[in-house]
Image (cartoon, rainbow, N blue to C red; front, side):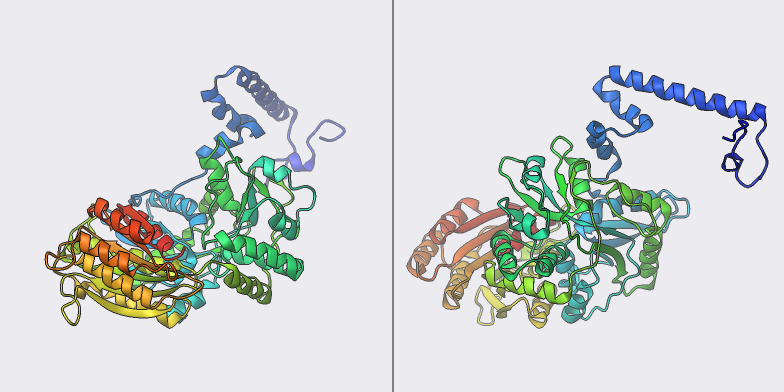
Length: 570
């Protein structure tokens, strides 16, 4: 306002340059008084409203700290829908499969749903499959290859090219996310004043850190430690983290009962807190900060029409409508406002430069020295029943193929593995089993490519009954003969049902043979992964009890892939 009571220049209607008269000013003042009165009325009403109406008032009056969880539960997508959104623009949309980094998957799926409601939306039903970028990069041969890929770093494109020959490129990142440490509030408050990376990850509170060989978050966090602390501190941090570390970011189990934390992204923490509003986690922002995870979309399809649909999705993710959805999920968007900070935060979230490659390499080398190692013989059922259809319409074999290539690509590069198949008389000498790929390191691109190609060709071997017991005995003998010191040596049997060989080993003979072959000095554990619960669980558990190991029943691809990854060493 001016001294005379008239409007200041900035109060004039935009673009007109005119002054506001007394009557119009009185209307403006009256409207402001009415709005102020309404806000006051709503504040008074909020004090007396029941729990169920609190959220509506908060949206008008502003977000209070105590209501944050309820607001985010409504505004933040927390899961990927099981069914693709159908566009309103056409009746017969093309199906487009998109593998997407888990931290951004719910937000991207929500954005695609918003896009599908546009009258001019692409004629596509986008299906989103959360998958770690490291695993996607190693599984682009055969059934494991999606139409598009949303990764969290362009570092994984080199891995894709070396293993499968796929030279994927992506446009500018549509979103980024800072790296933080998530903890129950009590553990976060107990950290003290030193919030450097070395102090947070090397303190008395254990913090889960993903493998820097397999995780962008792990690369950024441990690279920051390597760049800012002594070698002895780095060694201690990596040694502790590597003993139980995997290639994935997980916030499961951070319930405050035992002080602990996990390195994650700001976006993944936002999604977690929205889904767990009754027990949100606190974000701890290490002092030095580090570079962000960067999310970008690449087409992997050779089909021009599919590529155009992928491009349309990519363009939409850069629109303001999509950015709003992404920011609500804790993601940072180019040229946009930063997302709301986590409701509970220790420190200041700082996004800086990514650690130098040398720092990341130092941490990764120490990890490989400290982490547990696995050698596994994987034997896959190719009996005729594997052509049966699942509820989704895919064959059981197709499900196994997709899960196997993704699982072998997801495990540590220190893992050694071999691949066999089994069914009646499938072998070159009419054996019930057949080796396809001998033991070798999955850290070698050519070896992993050989796995992928062999799995992609399993359809040519399908047929006959299931020579399960003879195959268990043969694979166990092979694993014992190639036993590797310093490794967990395993046989992983994927089966679609019970033994069907009436002329081979029966259960009692198999148990006797394994009891005789068992050698405490060269232990081999047996893991049986049952597809759909059709195997004879009682009989197989008797067999497993002799050698040690595990019986795992799975019902879907979502169950099978992590079960195989775990059995192969995580």
